[in-house]
Amino acid sequence: MKQNIKLVDVTIFTGYSYIGLCKEFVWIPGDRIGSKQMPSRFIFRGLHCEYDVEALMIRKDLYLRTKEGKEYVINDFQITDINDVENVGGVARNFDLLFEKFPEMKSVTAGEKVIVSKKTQVFAFKAVSDMINQVRVGHGIDAKQTIEVSHTMVEEVLQAPDAIMNLMDIKSFDDYTFTHNVNVATISLLIGVAMGFSREEMDDLGTGCLLHDIGKLKIPLSILNKEGKLTDQEFAEMRAHPTYGYDILAKSKGISERAKMVVVQHHEKFEGSGYPRKLKGTEISLFGRICAVADVYDALTTDRPYRVAMPPYEAMKILTAGMDNHFDPKIVGVFIRKFSLYPAGSLVELNDGSIALVLKNNPVSVVRPVIKIVIDSSGRKLKERIEINLLEYKELFIKGPADPSRMNVTASSI
Ligand SMILES: [Fe+2]
Image 1: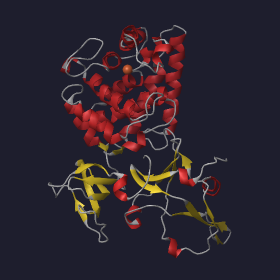
Image 2: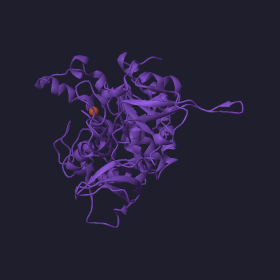
Image 3: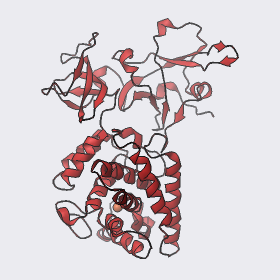
Image 4: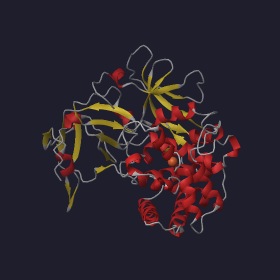
């Protein structure tokens, strides 16, 4: 599969941390041990990387992003000191050789790393698209399949109730309509687990979230996909989708009232300025309030035709800024605790200006992981390994992801 991608056009990062640009890589043919051919290895050369590679090895997956925004992941990647290498097979500047010789490298697509398995996701996409077709031909929907999908998703989520979710895991690059429904359901179910919901509540929450935007099927595509500003009339039509959704579900058998509330209330805002009914605080059902948080988070972090996806920490900032007015602060609090903002391997900037590498997350506080300072506040690169548990150093805190310009790199963007 020829991609015709030059390596110089590829940025390299782990998790959310930018590592650098790289001009070429060295290819080392794998040894033959007995009858077994070991896989080839690749070493990136000329990589601008300002922190020590030893620490980087804690993050085993390496992400490569092309100019077009396509992402690839290499799992179990090893960074090796170039001086130790013998038997160099060749030097390449084209990305294609990586594809040819390194079959483990795969495109980052929806579902591969999500808590909910790929199989269930496919099942969910099918259930939602079947329902879309039923609505299009004017029938009430048969929700049996969607309820079943929700049930399976709940089972999978319940298998890892204590997981701190890496926000990267939920990122997807496929069809927005389908992945969005599944993502919103997954995020909501994780919040539901953290809030101690019963099995029945989880099933209803999952079903409601999978169907939350079903009313958009009644909105003309010319409005739905319009890139420019909507007219007042178009805006009013758009804002009718929760009510349309409720009406569709009212004609359907088997959907609980709780699930229907998610559909009709997911755009209500906590302080009362939402739609369609301007409900306030606990007038909005708990499930509706959960879906509102999950919906906005997923919409912000996904590429859309009119907007490039926002990094998770930026989206998280928007959610926290919306606490007390748009969203239920209790639910945003649960969300922040449940999701890992800075996965191991991320580079972060501290309030004193130093740059640190995240080594391990603390389950009690995802904003206070165990870190290692790599560049101190005076800009000096540290060779010695100073580990700091941010839970024990309250005067230090993470300001945000590290700015790549601090690492002397020349990336145009991350
Ligand atoms: Fe919506």
